[in-house]
Amino acid sequence: MQGMASEHFKMRFSYAASEVAGQLIFCVISFYILKFYTDVYGISATAAGSILLIARCIDAFDAPIWGILFEKTHSRWGKSRPWFLWLCIPFAVFGVLTFVTPNLTPALKIVYATATYVVSSILYTGINTPVTSILAALTPDSHERVVLTSFRMFGSKLGVLFVNLTVLHLVSAFGHGNDRKGFMLVMPLYAAGSVLLYLVAFRNLKETVQERYQKLSVRESLGALRDNAPWFIIFLSSLFFWIAFIARISSAPFFFQYVLHRSELISVANSLDVVSLGSILFLPYLCRRTSKRNVWILGLIGSVAGQLVVFVGASSHLVLLVMVGWVIGFLASGLAMAIPFSVLSDSVDYGEWKSGVRAAGLLTAVGAAFCLKAGSGLGGALPAWILASCGYIPNMEQSARSIFGIEISCIWLPAVAYALASIPVFFYHRYECMEPHIQWELGERRRVAAMVSESL
Image (cartoon, rainbow, N blue to C red):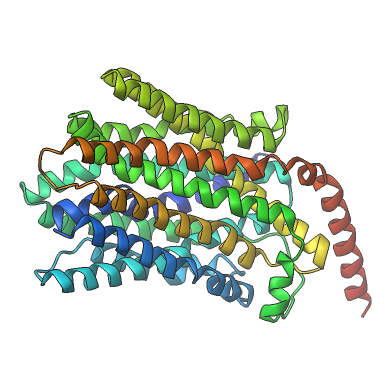
């Protein structure tokens, strides 16, 4: 019994480590790349927004390709796990190159920024999607998947907290006032930590749910999407969620510096993402007490409420109230972020039950990675374009019009996107109620298939 508990802890810890590894690089990109491009590397807000959208859209469409590659992966380490080993170093290298600032002409700066950002994002899709797809292979138990998702989110928030508490201070300390030099020296440290943690996940995670080998064509893999209503609900909600979340955090540095005139609070505000652990830790309990659908909706509506509190605080010039709204937003978004990663594995089961095709790689690549990348692209580009259209000028006192643009980007754009994300979730309850029957029937199918295989 003690040995089993130890194995459970090692699996959960290692699953969390895989998410910390990705956040050590991706969090810096998500939270600070827009301000880095405009205020450090000297790229215009319009060009920066276009880079974010173009790069993420290109990257978003590589998600199905990665998914098909995962489906065709059959190694002695499994289908998802080997990608931690194969991609950790390339991802780390391009994560560093994204923040290297060679002295180039304005046009070549845009080319360089686009190229490094595209490649690092493509590699992040390749190494992060297996973190989601491996969940269906770690355990068949729906509740244990929620627990593992909670550990994954804990790792995510731990990585985000570490980055936000350290990155700007380290950049300042290493660069001695030269942020270009600071980023170039700090990012290799984060990249080394990322590689180490991915190797820990590779070593300790085991794909114990044995899948029947299926040599599937692309058309057959796509068959797992056909009539997969719960997957489409997850897809639509996740897309709007990531637009909201990335718009909020990418415009936060502008909001705190130019609207509140409290730039020292930028790191503090982004570090408050850690409070979402409070809601994530209670995720298994909440899902037992009520449905996953209800917890999901609570997270999204709570995120809207947080944005409204931020608006009231900013309008009243009450920084404390703004921070309260910021905390409410992170607490609620923790639930809204975690639930889709858990229910994606259930949609894989639904697809297998409905079509006979188990396409974990494809469903999670498109349902998680595509939404994350497309949503992040729009969530980063829309604020940049709004700032540019409102006359934003870096490192200058902003006009009333540009202040208005910052408020739209940081408050209203996320609020509307969170609200839109909640709409499809209202239709999820029907499919959640079917999960026990689906698990039973799939178990029977696998048992019969195993008996037939043994008799041959």
